[in-house]
Image (cartoon, rainbow, N blue to C red; front, side, top):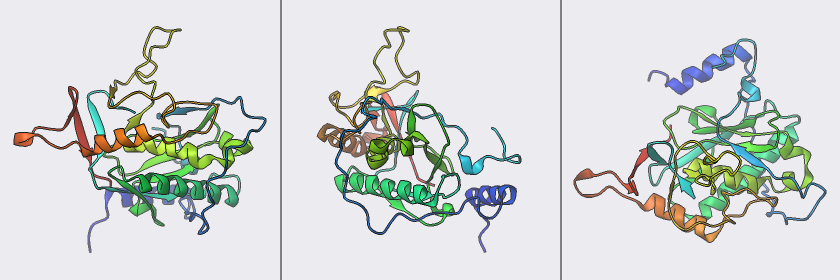
Length: 269
């Protein structure tokens, strides 16, 4: 019998600390809704924002738990190895109701299907067990004006995509949560915010401290930009993401590059 993986050991420790139902999962609805129309509503003036430094997910909070297309992050452009399947799971704990958990899982499945249909170089797949997942969708509690948050490609055993209270309290954004998830999945693919290199006029510094590089033309309508309307994947997003995942090593094993920045491939855990 094979020794347990690091991920399985961590999962066991979480269950020991928080109880056998701490990591119970929920399935997306078998009847995926048609993408809802973007109708106006009283929350039209809401401008969401996104974070990639996350709080502790609600299912992992407890007295015994430890508190511990721009692309690129500091000295590398991280991406998943081309052709990878990024598997995800949805946890039920932390959501106000089981219906909210199912709603979130169903809309993430819809967003995954959208990206999968665009054939950008990697695909997403829902799984039932946390031990088989690269990331978990879970509730993050309240985080001001943030609807959801995600992560960039990395070597972690398990990553988190968090969805927050405002995503359920405003009807327009709840109905279009799948579009919010298309933005978050952009981060999972390795995409930075469209404005990452822009200078904040109030501080004189770039909006995002971690360095990024530009691949392809700018597009203010990019799914990776902020807007008072739910985001939409643009043809330029698709073209740039495909180009990113089409980059290959050069002669003699020279690493793929975006400008002067090395592309680093990660295998999903």
